[in-house]
Image 1: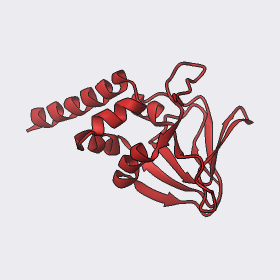
Image 2 (image 1 turned 180 degrees about the vertical axis):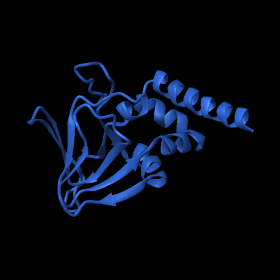
Image 3 (image 1 turned 135 degrees about the vertical axis):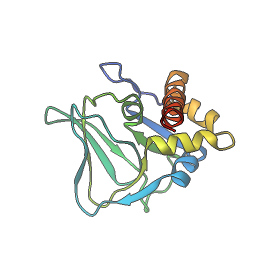
Image 4 (image 1 turned 90 degrees about the vertical axis):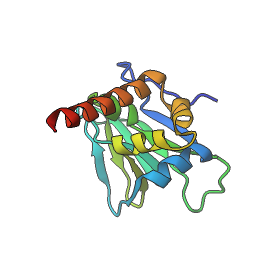
Length: 159
């Protein structure tokens, strides 16, 4: 089943459900954060610093103060009948695109922070590229690779 949702501006995937196999790659390589109170993850018009995997709790996506989507993660008391975990904002973070939404996390939520370095680390793992290609299109992966190559070339030039 394809869980991809495109933004109205075409900036890419803003919400995608990860299955357990995909989730394992992100949780293993990411830092996990627990939120004791409501917090803004990213603002409308801001370039997100990372993508977020919702492990439990909820994230609300808003535009101009209106709730567009309430994304719920699996909570400890969940029966587990839904075998997915939501990934939010990764494509805008990778492509350095301003988010058309504001993302707000609820108190008691647990998130895995998916930065560029986490994506690059996943690419080095066995089957990492295949897992990422299930989630992101090849042009996003090519963009990550070109950014990484550009950084390596800059480091070599400075030596």
